[in-house]
Length: 101
Image (cartoon, rainbow, N blue to C red; front, side, top):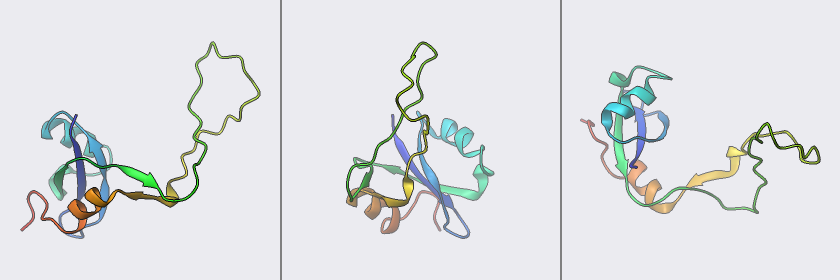
């Protein structure tokens, strides 16, 4: 499934990275936070979001059948140290986005 980098047209503020089958589905996902008409996007190639520092513990929600109470119940993802891979950074900051004037 394709990944899209989305930002606002006027301010160039990052809206997010979305995975969608097509641009219609992308617009539906963007609509959760703002009007898709105010956004532009770029189809992203290979790449991702990575952490440069040490590995971080990411807890996943447990099923109702899981009775192991020894693990923490916190499921927050520590985004503050995340960054785009070089390919996604280049596509997001140096290439023109679809719809950009």
